[in-house]
Structure formats: C-alpha cells, structure tokens
Length: 374
Image 1 (cartoon, rainbow, N blue to C red):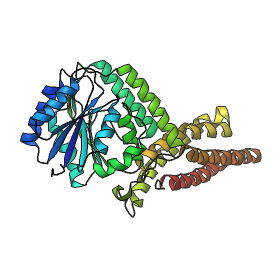
Image 2 (spheres, rainbow, N blue to C red; image 1 turned 180 degrees about the vertical axis):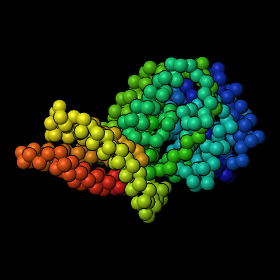
Image 3 (spheres, rainbow, N blue to C red; image 1 turned 45 degrees about the vertical axis):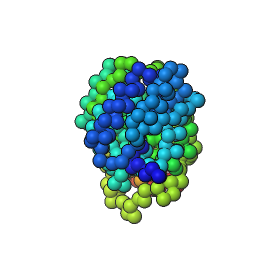
Image 4 (tube, rainbow, N blue to C red; image 1 turned 60 degrees about the vertical axis):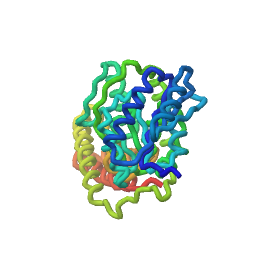
C-alpha cells in the first residue's frame, strides 16, 4: 500500500514535448535531494496534440513518485481541479512546466501549510524581495492587472497569476466547487474567494525568469481575466461568494476591537480632514449644500475601499450597504444645511451640523465594516 505524500505537486502541460522531460527530471532531482517532506509529482496533460503525454507516461514509468494523467479538454484550471480533487496528499501545489520560478522557493511555499500556520501560499513576483527577469510588455500587463484587482476588490494579494501556488488539501476541497473558471482566471478566482472567506494567504517573494517559449497568449488571457474580474465583482456585489469551509475554516479572534478601531479612526480622520478642506474651499463658490455634496462624495469611495482592505475582519462590504449609509448621511446633511442657511446661522452652525452628521455616519460605517462575513 502506497503511503500518501505530504506534498503533491501538479504540473499542467499542453504541447510541451520539447521541455517536459528536462523540466520534470530537474524537479525530481531537486525534490529527491533537497526536499524534507514526502512528495509526488503529477503531470496533467491538457489534450496535447504532440508527444507530451507519451513523454509524461515514460517519465512516470521511469521516475519514482511521478505519475501522469490525461484530460480530453484544455484549461489550466481544469487540470488543477482534476489533480487536486483526486489527490490524497496533505498539501496540494502546482508549478508551471517551464520552472520559471526558482525551486528554492518551494520549501518556503509549503512549510506554512504543513505547519498549519497558513491555508494558502503563493509565489509573488511583485512582493518586496522578489527578483524578476521578463520583458517590459509582460511586466506592464502584470502590474496593471494586479493593480486593477487590488483597486476593484481591495485585495492585499500582490500577484494573482504567478504559476507557483499551494493549498492545504482540506481547504482546496471546500474552495474548488465554488470556483467557476477552468482556464487562466482560475488562480485569481480561487484567491479572491479564499480572501473573502477569511483564509490566511502566505505570499513568498520568488526569483522568476520569463520563459521565452511560453504558450500563453498574453492579450487573450488578459481579456479573459478582465471578464472574469467583472463576473467576480458582480458576484460579490450581490452578496455571493461565501464558502462553507467546515472544519477548515480559520476561527477569528474573539476580540480584535482595538486594532480595528485604531485603523478605522486613522482612515476616518484622514477622510474627514479631506472632506472638511474641500467643504471650506468650495463653500463660497458653490454654497454650503453643493460644497457638502462634493466633499463627501469625493471621499466616499476611497474611505469604503480603505476600510474594506484594512479594517474588515473577513470578506468585503457590500457596496450597496455602504452606499445606503452615504446616501442617508448626504440627505440628512443637505436638509440640515438648508435649514441653517434659511435661518442665517452662518459657518459655525454649518460646521456643527456637519460634525454631528459625519459622526453618525462614522458610527454606521464602523458597524458595517466590523461585521464578519456570513
């Protein structure tokens, strides 16, 4: 009876006959000589039309702890879903066949998962300490894509698409059914769902050298990824995306009020100062009501985004709820300022009204961002 390995490394391939043999032998040599955990390498062929699968089966027959499987459809996400779902390992991982990521990062990647400290680990080409060699076109596209995701989802993940990731198997079994994409967006969707559900994601800076013979169509992949990001944004906006993690869920702290309160106060103080400065600058040319509308609207999105990223316990706030707090506050201050203006009470009364309204808004917003995602 074969003992289940600690780590199962999937290597998805499509028409990689030229590089597969050398890459798998290099990976096998590294794991055999330098890796402290038990392991398996699973080559997953995505309907290749060249000799890829024949080479894969030959390697599996020759090399210990190497297996090969073939799918009749393409898709990196599909390959990983298949490999991870049927694995009996404690930790499931994957890396691109080109081995662009230096193998020395594999142990730092999986160690936090084996210890139980983290739930998911990813290689990052954009984290401090990473060393990356690739052309300017790919570098620009990668940075813009990840910047867009960090803006849209207030995510703290720096590099969604690096082909070097690992998950605790029990976590993977709960997350995989919730992931809809089976192609290149699979990675991003998996990580967004994991972060939304409060899982701990460990990011490892890697040494990474671009593969000049890559089969990836950068333009087409970028378009598909943007479509996937839009789908996830709509999904989260509808309050979807919560996953029942069962025993794999990471329990939150019983009381982290202090840290959240301080963070919230810093964000709120900054946005209030900006709003007040805008109000005072625009009061004369626009009038109190219009100046208030511009000042509050100008800081609303940034305030909600910052609290989502730094204050929220798990998940992300539903924008419609944050919007309702904003609309209620704006409506109340508008009516109050109209009353102050009609009574001719002047700037001190206006500032008092704004202080009361903005304080009430801050309390409502803090209640919103303090909720734990259900």
